[in-house]
Picture 1 (spheres, rainbow, N blue to C red):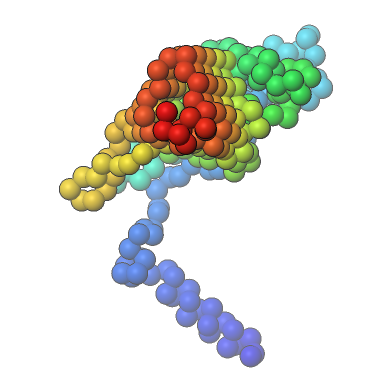
Picture 2 (picture 1 turned 90 degrees about the vertical axis):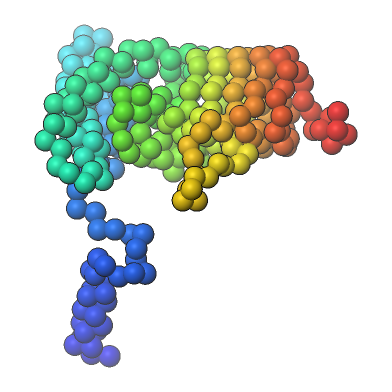
Length: 296
C-alpha cells in the first residue's frame, strides 16, 4: 500500500469522525466549552500536598523553619491562581449559555476554599494519627504521609468534598478519580467523613456518594459502602437519592465486606470480613461470617 492510499483512508475516517450529527455517535457530543485541565488539577493537588504537609513534597528550602512562611505564601498565591482558572472552567462546563458572571464567582470560591485549608489540614492530621495508631507496621507519621495510599485517597476526597460543598461542578469528581487511578480506592466526593478516619491497605475500597461515616472509623481493603438498588424516574434514569450506608462512630469493617443500602451500622460495631449486609446493625454489635451463614 503506497502513501497516497494510506492518506486516502486517513482522510475518509477523518471525515466520518468529525461529523457531529451521526446517529451512531449520539452519546458523544462535540464539546466546545471551557473544560477543566487534568494537568492543572494535578498541579493543584501537588501544591496542596506541599501546603498541608510542609517539608514533605517541596524543596529543601521550603522546609526550612526560617523560610516556611514565605514559601507558604507563594504556594497559596499560586494555588489561588490555578484554582480560580479551573473553577471558572468548571462553572462554565456544559453550560448552554455564556457565563460572564462566573469569573467573580470563581474568584470568591477559590478564596473561600483557601480559607478552609487550615480546617482540612486539621482533619487530615487526625487521619494520620488514626492510621498510625491502627497499623503496627507504620513506624512514624512521616511514613504514613509519604507512602500510605489510604491517606492519599482521603486527602483527595477531603479536598474534593470541600469543593463540592462550594457547588463547584465536575472538578471534585476528577480529583477523587485521580486518587482512584493511583490507589485503587474509590471515594465519591459527596461522601461525608468524620475525623480520625483510617484506611488499612485500601485497594478495592468503594465508598458511595451519600455515605455518612462518623469519627474513629476504620475500614480494610475491598470494603464496599454501596447502594442496594436504584429508583428510576419517568425517563428510566436513576434518581440521586439517599442510597448508601451510615457508619457511626468507632466502627471497624474488615476486608471484602459489602454494606449496601441506606442502613445504619451502629456505634462501636465490628463487621467481619467477606460479609454481605443489607440490614442495619445495632450499636456495639459483632457481625461475623459464621453468624451470617447460620442466619443469626
